Length: 258
Image (cartoon, rainbow, N blue to C red; front, side, top):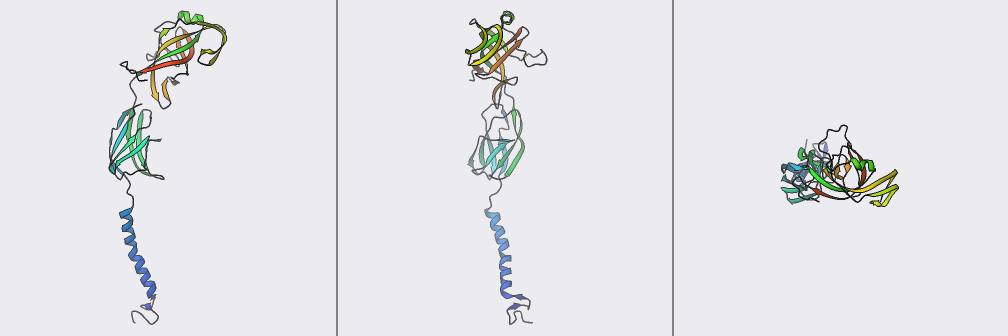
């Protein structure tokens, strides 16, 4: 039997044009695969991260070493997107830390649609050292409370027991006492209105408050510590409530942070 018959069939079964087409297609498969492997974007590789431990509230920048870093990638720490991803070269990039609570966080890199690489537990955030807020509060309290409240008293509010030694401490009771009845308005406590029963006093108090920096700002026993926020001071002598109208944040050595 001839290889190509009078009808142009190969071995009498396959049309010659079809055979050539099949051969070309089969030859293009390894060529296409090779081109794909050569020109496709390789997923990034992370070989080291510095630092791996940061302090809560610190404005840290991580340096990551590896391969395949490129612009437009997004870095995430746990469920939080980084404040910025800067590519210095294909092997070096910087990740700006978002504000995170203490704990361990995965570091992951994403393109616009998918996760490319994840480093489990890559970053540990440790609590910040004890920080002190000195707050000035416009308090409201009855005369009977003011008579027994002493400088040096410790705040016991928000505690199941009275055994805490890390509470706020009353530093000063101002002499600017004003007697009020009923509704205390904007001329009293920074625009806040307090409904009181009977005659009571408003006055300035200065308090040392141990605070922690969280994602929502400075807090003390789950209370926000900021200008305009309400503040309650409860000692064994009684309870005073008011509003913070000024504050200073300092570290353990007395250095002013804010």
